[in-house]
Amino acid sequence: MKPLILTGWSVPEFNEPEFADLAVEFFFRFGWGELPSPDELATYLGPRTSEVARGCHWSDFALGWNQSKNRKCRNLSLAEFCHQYETVELWFDTQPNAQLKLVWLLDYFRSYPETIAKLKFCLIDLAMIELRQLGRWRPVVVDVTERELETASAAWQAYRALTPEACFELLGKDLSALPLLKPVLIDLLEELPSGSTGLGATEMRMLELIARGYSLTNALFHLYQLRQTRIFGEWEYGYLLDGLAFGPRPAVAGLDDTLRTLDRENLRDRHPAYLRSRLSITEFGRAVLAHKEDFSRHNPIDRWWGGTHLTNDRLWCWNPALTKPFCRQSERGVP
Image (tube, rainbow, N blue to C red; front, side, top):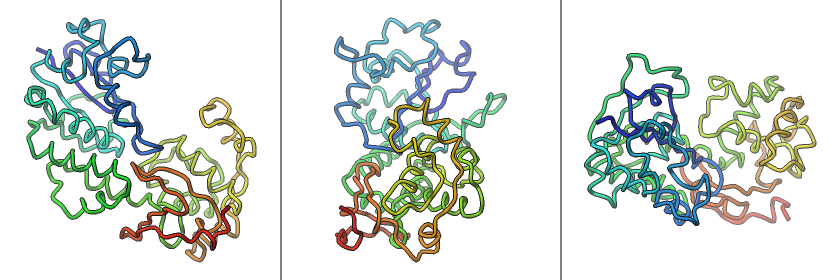
């Protein structure tokens, strides 16, 4: 029987009848914003009821329902649906969001022993977004054992925690059951604000590039080899750039002013506004880049890192060692 594929990124072969019966793609962006609540995630993976809205159930993002022999079972929970197959393959690549989705799903399946017996873990050591087709390439496939499940559960619970401490502690543990996980944890921790600049790795890299003359957002957002960081997507880079440009003491000038008032969900109008922008670094931005100023002392911080809400008064930092927050609001001049 052809397998069920669970993936963070679909490739054309997944739609071919001889390759798989069905492929389910998961679109969550666990690397940005507040994490979905446990209830939201349980609803997403659970059975579809009349109260579950369109787009809020795993079956809404499956490719190949028309050809699937199990299309009549699409309202089941994901774990129950997996019982229709002899093999369930997990295709999650090197990208941080893919690894976060993998540990989330393995943590979920840990409660379903009958499903675990069907799971196969694909060792994908590349970014699937770069694959136009699989061709002859196939990943190594291994059984999912208790080692993978324990590692995944520890990582998912740590990432959901109210502080990054548990994720930092994981770096000192054996994570070899999921060989792509430790580099992702390091990349995530580097996106915490620096203790000297108040900015994460992506924000500092953007300042560096703008200071070198990269004035167009296209290069900042899309040139992967240039930007060197990999946690965030295009729109998330834009939101970080908004924060650098529109605070009380901006580090970046030249960002189109209409972005101040455009809703973040209004991608249609935000896109041309970014393209119109001609960026430059401010004197304050140069001082931050030189580690002579702390951005967070002069500008509000309000974003999420996993389950941690980062604010000026709760600013967990990375030096590259984890630093607990302390209140220094009066020094920053932040209301």
